[in-house]
Image 1 (cartoon, protein in one colour):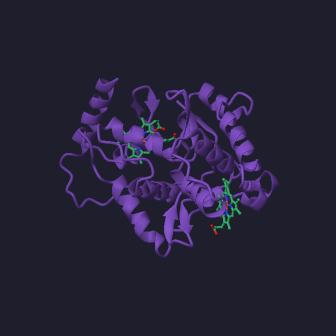
Image 2: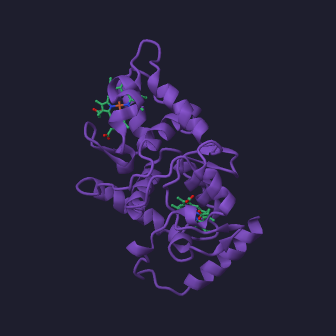
Image 3: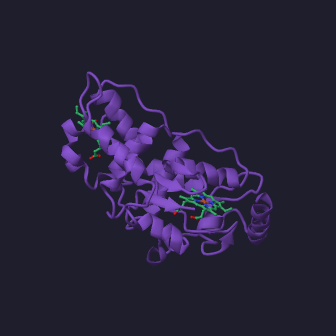
Length: 262
Ligand code: HEC
Ligand code: HEC
């Protein structure tokens, strides 16, 4: 497994060895932006498409129950956001976004935790906990099929640039940046995967390799570990910034949650 990554890393690194540091950053053309779904094998696509077989719906359904039932001595999400989340339809397609009250950027997980602490009098949920994954899956699924569109104006622009810098910075023992795989080599084979353009539209989603459901940041940690860099902590500012950068980069692609990936 590692050898295959290494082989590709060497090839990719060789291609970029002599390029000067100031080389313009390669980007995707707007008309070539496609979901990772397009690079999956037909049976994985079929699993995602079948609402009864797609294992991710276990998390969506758990999320719906958490959303609708009031925790002891507190209010249900649905008390403020409508039965069946009627007031939150389409909302997830615009995240990460600024929280007006604190002036800080939040992703969907962070937004849900703000409601827990600010409006429900509850403790925040841990990243990758079943409850937070389920609530995030449910709220994201309310935007299923909606095109991603995020605001990067004003104070958000610094976050966007931070995410972009992370995307173009080489790291790890293989000294590879995200763009070298997902901008420059998408469509090529790596370890039995076809490298996609690296969009986050399926997440939180179910990965067959995990045998479970996970967040976009878990996927990012896998990519960092893949180049043998130390993965960042869940909820770190850098990953939050990368999520924003990825959302802007994927603008127009529909939310697929719950996606299924290899
Ligand atoms: C050595 C190549 C490589 C590097 C470098 C890399 N990735 Fe990946 N990435 C992969 C492979 C392989 C997959 C799984 C197949 C695919 O592309 O969807 C993947 C998957 C993804 C996915 C999920 C795509 C989907 O549709 O399921 C995202 C998002 C992603 N990468 C983002 C990143 C980010 C952000 C970075 C930099 C921090 C990065 N990747 C660095 C190879 C790489
Ligand atoms: C007592 C009312 C209340 C409860 C209960 C509540 N929220 Fe909220 N929620 C709000 C308010 C008010 C906002 C607007 C931002 C703010 O003022 O914090 C908001 C914002 C949101 C947003 C962002 C909406 C947007 O347009 O960007 C999401 C998503 C959300 N809540 C999800 C949840 C979830 C999931 C739960 C349950 C875990 C929950 N909320 C519980 C009041 C509530």
